Image 1: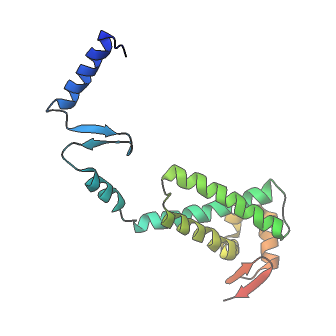
Image 2 (image 1 turned 45 degrees about the horizontal axis):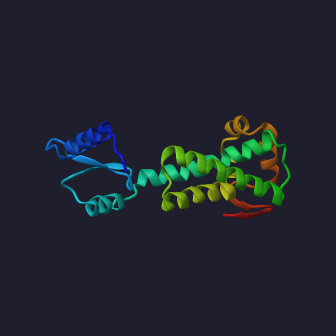
Image 3 (image 1 turned 90 degrees about the vertical axis):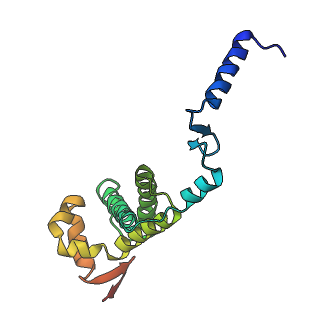
Length: 171
């Protein structure tokens, strides 16, 4: 193997930079980050895993899930014109909500499994109890959805109840 003099000089400069006492870190390609030289990789991995989820992040994840289903339902009702209660509308709501959850949580860096569970809990909560918001805030719901949607919800549900598909469970 023939190495050019420039390649040897470049190599010597890199070795000199690595051995420089002011150089306090190196880049680890496996972790994708700069590692201080005086801290072991085990300590860094242990600290990275030791992050505890916060209550605020959990609540934000619930809101991401709830907002995703509200957006999915509004999109379905306004633009897809799917108004009847059927397996197709339930599947459409869940599919669109899942896509919205993945997008929003990815942008907000809430991708841990426990945050995903909280996001799905938000989706399910709005799925079975979201119509109560229409009962208590019909004007705001008419802005998000439509006035027709508010009318349909008021005809088919009752306040303070849970609804799954076509069955209403009073509280």
